[in-house]
Length: 135
Image (cartoon, rainbow, N blue to C red; front, side, top):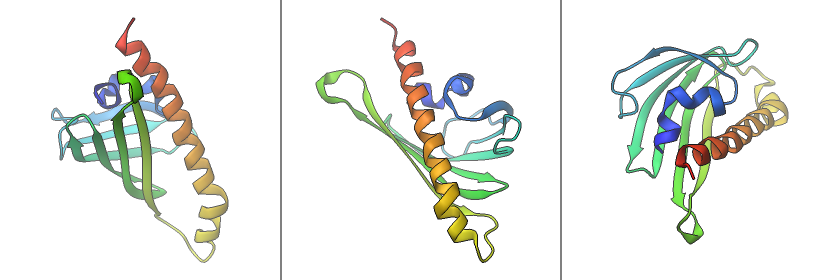
């Protein structure tokens, strides 16, 4: 979990990450807040507030951005064979603006794009975590 919460490493694995705007000194403790901006034509400004950081197994943040609000939860579990960890990520979100076609747009376009972005983040995180673990 230390690699996941080390925002200095985020450019290497967080999809669309651009730069840190503001970071509470208490990050990644519960209640701490982080404000970051995406790359151009990305998510824009993203505010994350830690809602749970549980003993190297769970890290959850409340996420607020122009297009959505929600909770992102990352779970870590020991991998079989005592090497590494299995990591899963879930984003439970609500669109900020929906309108009459919001649900359809979400199901057909947004959900798929978000799922693919989270998958790319996990793939790059695996590489970053392996490099951090060393030989």
